[in-house]
Image (cartoon, rainbow, N blue to C red; front, side, top):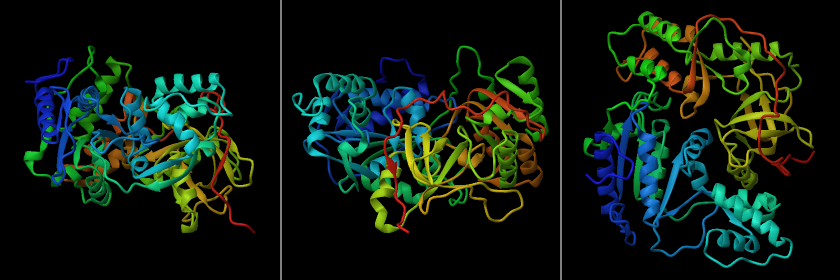
Length: 509
């Protein structure tokens, strides 16, 4: 078998070879390290599936390195340089900013699907800097940028491989070098899509239109999108186009969180037996916690995962009450979840500005304080390359047993937000946190109802997704109680340069 320098397991090596064969048919030979011009007229799609711990991300990373070694250009989503029509390209995508940031932390230059659909238009003067940073042109002479500013830009680009971050390091603002955004009109080449269990049919069709060579990575044990009737997009592919990694790769010390997740595959396992397994694991290993209450301090950075919407709303209101948050305003440090953009069609460019900065539906945000204009908020977008923005905001705080949410403040239009101290397990897919709290009474309710999804008890799918969101520690919370905070909410632990611009507009009175 033709495997990379890093030794892979047998099933990973087989999958690597099958992907290599697919790419060879498309004119990119990752074994010989050669490329040929794109071959038109034939579309290729393949799915690589595996449960948590099976090595999907490791394999994606090794395939990315192999493609990079052949000279394939990486499309980042923040700038696309000049290239000939014969240049081969690769884009690595994830459905959400959080999922993309998980890959970036592992050295894989991932971006969101949305950032590939919409591309920035650069001012020609600053486009010269971008082309220089990418090695396509000589160092430019820009009147307002001294050599030391260009040196800062170059150092930043070498570290992050991000054109906007490099230009920001040189002292420029986004409005200095980006004049607008446009929807992609030309197709790309090779696309890798992580967390494909989150895709719906429409998104999958859009991706196949953009990428003639598409490889999707997904976990068949996760929850399907709510509008997909329990099916995931790779379920529709013929078996010849699907691969599944079966071996579970562990750390040197066995991972009790993965052990619990994979125990759910046992068809004889009931909810009570599973909770006993969690209790036993908690006694043996501090990476599993049998929690008697929800720890409020963790909720500011990683939401409690619940099944029922009513539970989510109660926990959010309890979080705000224990921090003494007034109804009429937010406290700096409160977590939010972007619920979409409310702008009329005539403000399409402003919508693209917001979405390009990471304010897409499902994005996790920390409130930093009010903006300079009424209704504007300073925000930290979790997982974004440039995390700090200021945007017109509509914040909705849902109340128990009340049909309409309470709105402490709002612009006339802009980005809409729900509170993020608790989220449903469905919405948590694609995200990971260092520590995760799972509200077990909700999963018990799902087990008592006896519901199934795609032939499996729903509570098991919910438990699997919730458990595998935890990177280091799992808290299995068994009682409907909330701790007191150890201190006030904070924002001093958040990085990123302050946002100089107000993103979005208000209608004139």
